[in-house]
Length: 306
Ligand SMILES: NC(=O)c1ccc[n+]([C@@H]2O[C@H](COP(=O)([O-])OP(=O)(O)OC[C@H]3O[C@@H](n4cnc5c(N)ncnc54)[C@H](OP(=O)(O)O)[C@@H]3O)[C@@H](O)[C@H]2O)c1
Image 1 (cartoon, rainbow, N blue to C red):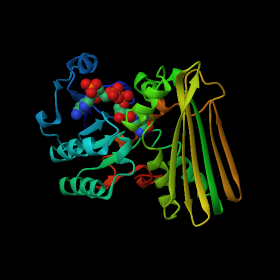
Image 2 (cartoon, helix red, strand yellow):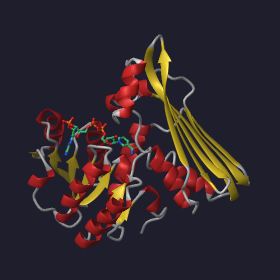
Image 3 (cartoon, rainbow, N blue to C red):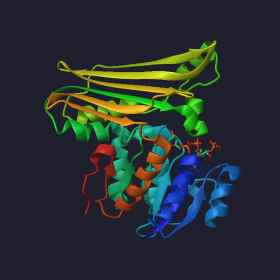
């Protein structure tokens, strides 16, 4: 099976390491990379693996060795770490939102790193990675002449990890929210990437994209946010609407597709993003050794592998 390295010992890396061992997707965890010794301590104790402050310090990986890379949404920060991991002999699976639809120069660099080192690089997750892109795209392939896709997602942030709650701006004043938004500290990254993945999968040119993010304010303080992205392409539209709010009731995921036949899919309660991400990561770990060396965005993976 091969060994596993965790790069970023936050809630996502930690949950994925536990699940990968439990599901026997890897033999063992052989290293935990995180600049913060306190953050990596839990996983070091759990797995008995040594800790490293940076990917620059890692030993060379053997065939089949894989890394989960879960430390930032920013492709400019994560791509160099993945490049180093591939050079050191590791396949890489990442939750980095910015890599779901990276700029062309990063896309090329990731392909070059994968191919020149004979390694697989997979970008996955729940959102982006599944519920607002890959899943509606799969549904859209079951309808002819699609003219519009609308995806509505309502998430109770009280049920999610702290780092996501912080991105909703909970507890901020409207002024602090506006400042945090323009500094790029708030909101779920990756919605624009998801809409581009969907348009790309439908072979629609993905021009004219509009994004808006509004705070939800109760008694003068922010409790969450409404995030909308809309794409128009030759009279056809895709709309992604995400509400992330504290103690939100009536949570669900909903997909409406106008085509022949029309489709309406509703998941009552909604797809749990944190647990879903763990599932996507473990599944991607399994695929690393079955795919041709390349860089795979969420919709690039075939449905049946092997
Ligand atoms: N696509 C999806 O569906 C999806 C779902 C969930 C999460 N995500 C993304 O996955 C990432 C991880 O999520 P999380 O909640 O676990 O994040 P987190 O709580 O921020 O934890 C990340 C950890 O990585 C550490 N770190 C920072 N720079 C590092 C580096 N260069 N190398 C190794 N470790 C480093 C951080 O240390 P410091 O705290 O000292 O910086 C922190 O301990 C986030 O970017 C999140 O947005 C994506």
